[in-house]
Length: 437
Ligand SMILES: O=C(O)Cc1cc(O)ccc1O
Ligand SMILES: [Fe+2]
View 1: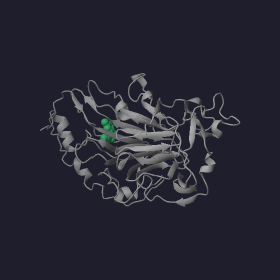
View 2: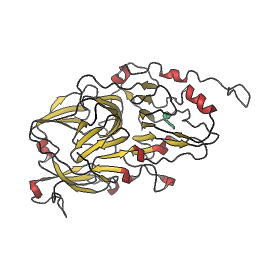
View 3: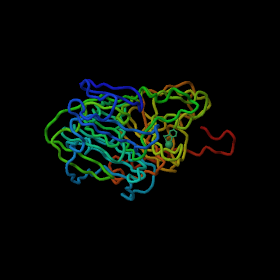
View 4: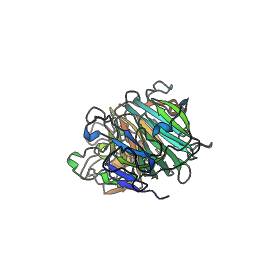
């Protein structure tokens, strides 16, 4: 199966998988071609300003009302939604986890989602959840949509194929995909078990950050975002559609596949992005800038510069700053920082932060380089150095992130994470030179 994409971020796309299936000149003909039903999918209120107005027109074998029957409540134990506070006994702290193991039992994507943190409130459409997924079988006759927010998948191990209403997306580690709120999809494995991270955004959609004085280029460029061409399956057999709605899961039995969109047009659609196409801009003389320079996508809140979520990456790059402590500084942050590692090493934590692992530095909790990293960077020769073969990321939110019971009690939680700062010694000795020995 070769998948095809259309380039551009938030474009008004049009695509058809049968010739003439897409009406021209109008949205809702009396009798659409091929006997298709016309249906609008709204991703914003009808009256949202043009810049944020999102909707697509879908031409499908059956209207979506035929893809739902009576719903039955079900549960996916480890997939939690905000508010989910006081769910555990663990005291406040800087936290880090080893990689989540791939399950031994047969587990599909939906069963393989483990929520690590939740923030904000799903009912108020603000905040997010940070999840880790790990699964070993494909969804076959099972489909899913999330009414609670868009889902950003960040694979760490194993590729995944996302069969959606609007086309097929394949992503490998190093790429990400975003499934809009309400999009019906199914997750297949491509090459063995899969593990990755997932950000569930309850708030306004991810968009490209403004570049300010950087100008019209660099960071994430719009043309590197890819939206799939129309694709459909005509499958007449018992299928199940799972729905997440206000934190609860429901299932409905249907007699066919809901992935039956033959043609569509509009600007509300899933997309993928290859993180290696991000063009980082950084310090070319001295000092370590704020990590916001590496924002790939931002989900705004109502308050300017105060994101519901920033998706930030730490990609391969040259370090050239002179007379500078080059890794991240020690800091405390009003935003809360959930981090993951896709591959390699992270410059603030050379040991203990592993690909597939995670860390959480919550609102106002101090953190920064471990003692080893500090020692190395405060004494290293400051010649140009390339950080290679690395890709870390951060889901940073204005809201405090509440730990789930799973995250607090799982075996992968590192008991001794804070010991990474234990050997930071006092260097103040009353002389201007300090004790840099
Ligand atoms: O804490 C972290 O490792 C993430 C981070 C990186 C950086 O370069 C500056 C600030 C920051 O929070
Ligand atoms: Fe930080």
